[in-house]
Length: 101
Length: 159
Image (tube, rainbow over all chains, first blue to last red):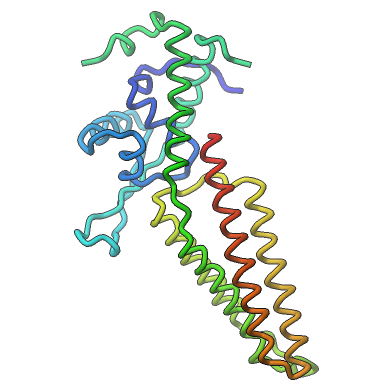
């Protein structure tokens, strides 16, 4: 088990939820994440920018021939640093909540 | 502007921490329940399995038997469909679960067994019967692909 460490960047509610949804997957489409969080494109982009600046999230864009507007699919994923920071943050929350096994 | 929660986590109460943790579980459940099973693409997996089994009818079982090269084409087809499933659902799963592993093993086993049975039928001159074994491969592969997909979604829900 890793060490608990409260992370101020991750703890902002939307950013915590972003990391929580990216943690169990390899990659998630921007649109799927936005719909799951029920936030606007702009809000999600803003928080992703903050997480990317901390080195916690990475994104890759791929062409999507299936979309009429020729937009590209943006795949999002947690980096190794992001996974470690999120896991440590969840442990810190569990310690505070008193639910750590 | 940073919220007060961001500024000082020492002010975070156990109840607030528990609520934040609970929110993560709720989000995962919402995401997993929003993922639609792509049945058309899963049926395409079945189609690949059925096509591979059907190639048994073009062989000549016996001493001069040469295995068809269709196995590689089927593998490429399966990889292309897997890519399309990811694009359709918007999710690239990290873990698919033990049940998915058994389902994939099941697909391989069923297709190999049904292919062997098909060769046997062809050796008896019953080429028409390969249509039935192909149908069986289609149904089994589609169903098992569905089992594997649902297992992956369940893994996502558990986190």
